[in-house]
Length: 81
Image (cartoon, rainbow, N blue to C red; front, top):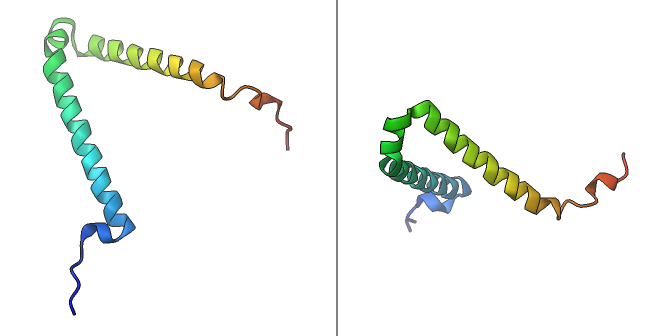
């Protein structure tokens, strides 16, 4: 009896499909960002737009770190091994 083989039968195949799906989603999000912000990029230039996006990401990371600081409270008092 022949068995039909699918890409998701192995763990590597499932990972590859998830990776491809994530890449497609990121591609579409990037395309939407270009369509939304294209006039801003043309006005101020790509370098300035990159700097603005980098600053927004840094501020987001800072707020996320501040929230996570409560969960890491007391971790510095762990004994050194």
